[in-house]
Length: 299
Image (cartoon, rainbow, N blue to C red):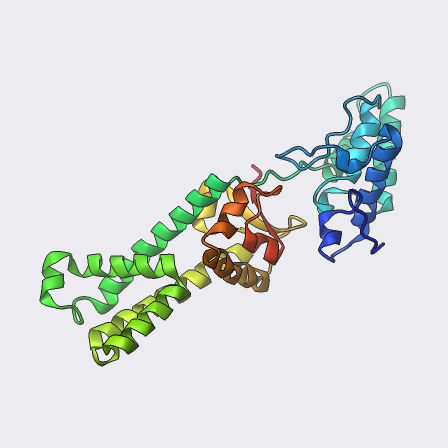
């Protein structure tokens, strides 16, 4: 596997220092494009939904050859040939199909469909936003119920119970902790230190509740995204999943890296999140840091 970086010929995983054998196949496909068109691969645009290079306009190539070159240049390494034997099988299937009087054999069609898989469709910004909103709503309701069931009215003044009730009180603090995360905890600690909150038992209970909610959200997101389902409940509702750059499930460690990298997106005045609306593969800042993609789940 070559480690040379050549703009226009080097796939994303190799740029990120994770070259595999399929990276060389990508470079080979891009070289074919240059030889057939006489133009540098970077002079062509890419399909915004699939990431495929749009290069066939203005050059006469057969569909079989064009499809083969596109196969070599798939954005995901897992969608390219896995080894040279895959290439031989692909070319052999084309050759046999041309010389066969009927349709290719059933096992040949099955093999071809296994090799050539559809490229990913990256999740647009608003789909991601609504998934986030669904997740937060689920968490807020859950922690509000937990606060009422576990803590009930014991630590709350009568005026609060009479106005919004225990459930309403914990819903408010659940909303605060779910949306602010670690910054909410830091803010509450600073308020407690400055105004003597640590001498008030209700303040300590509320702070503990916020800490618990923050930990619950962390575990909810990182654990579900690192499972084979690759998505939180909110993402499942919106039909999107989180993968690595090769389309595989992410590890728990990578899920943690992605989760805590969101802190950087927060302190950049949310610009890190808004990046998902404009980057080529719809990646937010924390996706780029963690090496992840958010894509639509295939039916």
